[in-house]
Image (cartoon, rainbow, N blue to C red):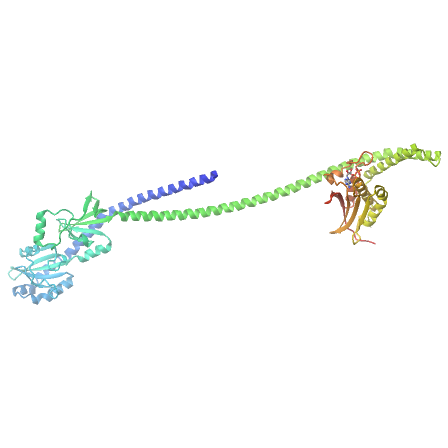
Length: 573
Ligand code: ADP
């Protein structure tokens, strides 16, 4: 099952993607409008600029025919009807002025001299009577005319002037043909889409050759006939262009919509049409949006990387904090455990202290009567003779037990540990063995002793340590009394400057009790009269006085193991 946080985060990323795409689309439309607006704002001035360029190109050589017509040699050649003499001159004029052709016609309209006299296709001998520029010049006016060359087939702008003799009579015509190919080429190279139409709507100049000599509106029959008669466009069919103007700013050419602007070309009634592609503006907008989107995505990636690094750092810090906290908890728990142990120890100590006071008064109070009873019994025995009666014997045994109890209690009343002497652990064990031998034999228990290779010595009161060992051995004898196997093993070894003495038996073990429980004063499992539950309390006290510890645990193979651990001393013997 998906977690809620996963669902939320996938929803959030879907939402962000939708917002992002919407923002990109909005930016695209806004930028498209902006670029189209910019294009619209600039297209009128650009159209005017291109129109000026054409005007400039046409006017540049406008005065050249007038100047040439004034040349004496031209008039002379016309008078002498010998064009050959001025051919080189016309060629030089043409070349210097960068005119496409310069030529001279006589009054009949026949070309008598031309700058292209040496070319394969030359104008010499040709009649251009039908051209309006010839008619204008003959009539004494400056002629201007755009046409496709009747001989060359190349379009050009023709400017003509009459040539007069010394009496001012018109004797011929000078014509300069201005080529406009360079303009077409320049527009093509600039990437602009430009058409220039004449009054009739015929395309005279175009940035693309395929549009040349097409019409942007239908030609009325009369107009077409006139054009054909003047051979203005040679044999060009003057087809209709797929041209449709929408409002003032849009035009559809060959099915593609363009931004549109027009400008008049001065003097000729020509019109320049500048077409700017809408797709160009849209491409610009798309490119800008794409760049922006890439930048935003890059920024998002960088920010996400930065954020994840921050998160990783925060996570590492919180991990470290957690580990530190865990360590602190551990330390606190250990301190609590120590405190608890100290409290238990304190309670035990105070109980032992109270027991000491109690024991002192009991032993003091009972000591006298018990001694008196003992004295009475001795006196009675003496009075009755060598063999005391059964009552006496029973009373004697009871008095002895009472004395034993008061002796044990006296231990708590009198602080020991004053005497300190180095002695061998083996000696103490052997001393204790002598004291319990009788019990061992009586209960059929075997005792094995292992003192290790080296003698192990401890320091303290040997007599009191023997008391401890006797107590442990007696308890062990009691523990194995009911067992099938009745064995006690005492083992001494030295470990890290400590003498470790273990008393193992084959009894029932500790039955789930801890040593802390067992050493509580008056804690006993033995029936009344057999044990007072003071043995282990006294033993632990004695071992503690000697700077060691007493402990107990269950053996791996059953039975109990009591361990006395004491600081090792150097052997003085
Ligand atoms: P007492 O021997 O008078 O009962 P102790 O203080 O010596 O007093 O012992 C307390 C209790 O510890 C015993 O009653 C017994 O239940 C238990 N105990 C002591 N030694 C052993 C042992 N070797 N095996 C099993 N239980 C033992």
